[in-house]
Amino acid sequence: MRIRLPLALPFALTVALAGCDDMAGTRGTDTTNPNVDLSMAGDMGSVGPTDTGDMKRPGAGDDNPDAFIMPDGFVGNLPDGGVFGGGGGDMGSVAHAPPGTLAGVTVLGAGTDFRDVSSDQGGGTWAVTTSAAYYWPKGATSPSTYNQGNGLARGKTTWDDEYWCKQSANDVCKVTNNVSFQSVAGGMPGQAVIGNIGYIADKLQVDPASGAVQAVEGMQVTSAQQPDPTELAAQQQRVVATWRAIVDLNGTFNGTAYIGGFHGTSAIHGLQGGCGCTDFEEHVHPFFNGNTETAGGDVRGYALTPQGDVWIGDRDVVALYLARSRGPAANLEEAWQASLDVFPGRKDEVWGLGVDGAGGVWVASYGNGAAYLAPGTYAPTYYGMADKLPTNYLTGVVVDNMGDVWFATFNAGVVRYTPGAAAWTYYTTTSGLPSNDVRNIYSDRNASGRAIYIATAGGVAVYTGP
Image (cartoon, rainbow, N blue to C red; front, side, top):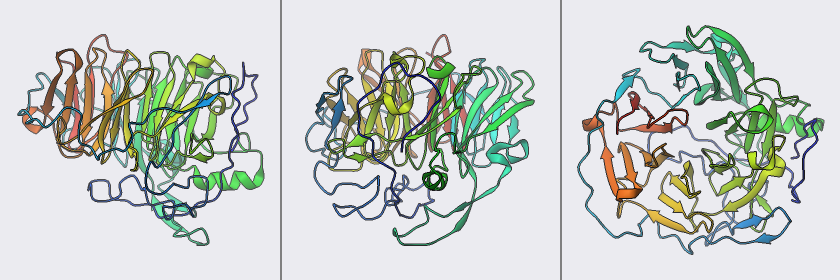
């Protein structure tokens, strides 16, 4: 699809865009068992060269030959480390140390299963369960909560799936599902973007001190984004969900949130006020296989570079979008720059991304462990259960303000890596976490020091220690 915004753009990137064709599949629902297809990797039909649609996947071998397009149109290749060995590391086998102590950790919402957590510019804490959004003003221990009664998800508690329930391209189906909240990203004081399954996302503004609702803006695909009536109807069926979101208040169009779900990456603009643009920019995919096929299924990984550009991770690849560095009016379509297969021969299943001060990229995979892509070359180093990780099922990764790397895991707590000391520390419930089932992890970029927020199945842990 093509994005249309009523703004003059500084320059264009020469890329042949593919249309969004129909695709079929069945979406799973289990989000707790590593033996279940959590990222819905089977939802696009059978794997192999006969696949059709705009997210078809290659067969065995190096599944996604990498693509890199320079601003002048030059197309080259990036290294991907050859054949990925399945999560074994580059550092040899070691014995995992016993759990460390998270001194001074604070638990918010103890006993509650939170799916995601974030903070806003005013120091307020945001979190979501499948049924509600929570907001703690700075220093508060009691939250305000919000749901459809406040206008989230356009007031809807169910949504009708006429697309993702398909078993094949020829199926006709309609399934009614419950709406669930899945992601949150804090913005201005008292502001958050809250992603859901069913009605994409909402931009919520509350009073930073009291939590009283001031405004709710729901996102949807309209003719402003897609003027072709036939394609509009198709996109309204596909673009219905948000797994992850990230906010760059200094980004394009006066502050932008990037949101990813079942189908590609979209953007919500004007977080700091009017931007003279279409607020909701819908949707784009990265490319692979020599720039002939599109990725972007089940987007769950986002990270900002020091320059304000965006790394995006999905089921198949990680991709770099040159967002802020292209200027204040750069849209998603022209921003796509590079796609990289991190775990060749496998589904990458990217669930988290983190960028360090040198521009290196940490990749957290649900099933493949972790990889570090070296600055500039993006050459990978792999980490898994054979060396530093307690599990290969990772649910998130962040690089904090002091340079430490934090991994969230499925049912194995949190792992912390301190590069300067080459030290790995493991945290579990014996360390002070409310649960070992960690849904996601967040580092507050606005904090003066270290501030780590950990969303778990038993509450949010906030760590501000050494």
